[in-house]
Image 1 (tube, rainbow, N blue to C red):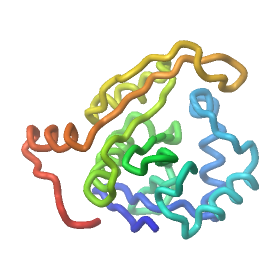
Image 2 (cartoon, rainbow, N blue to C red; image 1 turned 30 degrees about the vertical axis):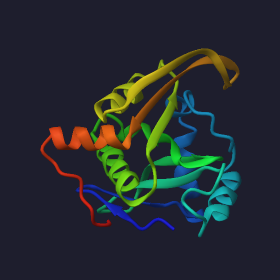
Image 3 (cartoon, rainbow, N blue to C red; image 1 turned 180 degrees about the vertical axis):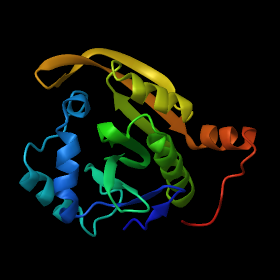
Length: 194
């Protein structure tokens, strides 16, 4: 089970069933939902999903695990990460990120992603972290590129989401690339836990 990861302004933690209302509220915001393939249309569905993941392995094979992004001073849930290891290799982890619209463009996404990458590359067996995103989602593209992810593929009309065919861009970051980037920025990767 994931221990809490703290940053200057945020706490990343496992989402609980009691977080379902907050998560559902921002997940149905039109500008957030536009780029998401979130299967839960009701709070009850979100509640049941979080209840199932309670106490589960972070890298339960072939299943998403949601990590909440919360404000450290109030505990308010402002977004979440989804993690899913490949069913045949836990060293390759798919990542999704969602942030409530009113908390976007304030540096919270970058702060949370930086902390999560540090955790995944130091505390787990992850060697490659990749993300699938709609190329129309400019803020997400910029966030991934600033974090050091590189574009690996652009698939044309490869996903059916929200009643339309959409393109899919794949971004990835290797452990070795993350370490090199950290060293170039003058920050040695930490070796202790969070």
